[in-house]
Length: 408
Image (tube, rainbow, N blue to C red; front, top):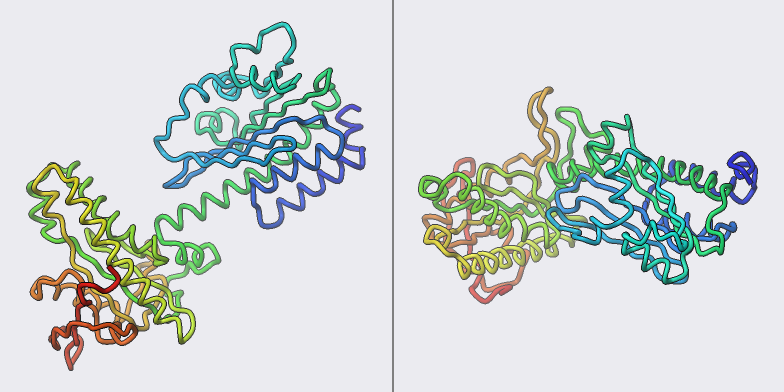
C-alpha cells in the first residue's frame, strides 16, 4: 500500500475527508487529535502511542501537548511560561528532531541500540513498541517557522512485530499533513482570541473578532462597574527603582484585577494604576448576581492584599493599598478613539460616577465604597456615609460602605 494506494483506500479516504470537514468547523484540537488516533487505529494502523506538541501565543500558556495511548486515557498538558520541562524534554527524540535540520525522525526499536540514548524510547520499547516515527510540520516558510517554533510536532509508535511498513509511513505522512492544516488554523484562531482577550478582555475580544471593529460600534448594556485605584502610587514610584515599582504594580493588579477575573468579571482597562472592570448583567434578576460577584471579588482583593503585606520585606510594599468604587448602571460598551487607534471600553455617566465614587474613598478613609444603586441590590447592613457632591450629578451621590463582616 503506497501513499497513492493509501489515498485510494476507503478507510483512509474517510479519515482524510473527516479531517477536512473538521478544519471547516469549530476546532477542538486535543479532541480531534485523539479522535484521529482512534480512527487510524480502527482503520488498521498498528498504533501503540501518539503524541502532539504545539506552541501557543497566550499570556498563561506557551505550549500544549496531547498524548494518546491505546487502551489508556489520553493526557493533555498545558505548559506555563518559565516552566522548565527539564531533562525529560532535553533528552527526548522530539527535541533532537527540533534541533536538527530534518523534518522526520525514524527509529526502529530493535537490537541495534541507536535509540537507547532516548529514555522515553527505552520506556516505550519496554511496553512493547517496535518502531517510532516523528514529524515536524512547519507553518509558513520553513526557516522562519523553525526560528519562531511555528508549527506542530507529531510522533507515532507501533507495536507491530516489524514496526511500520513503508506504506503505513506514507499514510502517516499524508494524514499527518492533513491534521497539520487543522493545527495551523487552530493556532491562528487561538492566537487571535488569546491576544484580543488578553489586551481587550474576553467579551470585548469576542465582539472584535465577530466584526465589531468600526469606530462607534457598540451598544448600551447594564453592568455592575468596578473602579479601583492604587494608593500613594506617585510616592511609591519615587521611592522605588523603576523595575521594583513595576513589580509592585503588578502585585497590586494581581490583588484587584485578578480578583475581578476570578469572580467572573471582565477587566476592560488599566488606566495607569487604576483598574476599570465590569460584571455583565443578563436579565432583570441578574443584577443581584453581578453585585454579589463584585462584592465577593472586592473582599478577595482585600485578602490578597493582606497576603502581600504578610510576605512583604520592605516598608513600601507593606504600605501598598487601594481604593475601590462599585456602582451599577447602563454604559455604552463599544469602540472609542480615532479611526487609526480604537479602544474597546465603557463610557457614560455611570462610568464617570464610579471613578468619582472611588476618589471619595480617600477623604472618607474607606477602602470600599458603593453607590446607593449598588447597595439596593444586596440586603446588607450598609454603613450610610451620606450624600456627597460630585461633578455631573446635581443631587450628589449617596455613598455607603459594606459592613465589616459582609462577604468576609
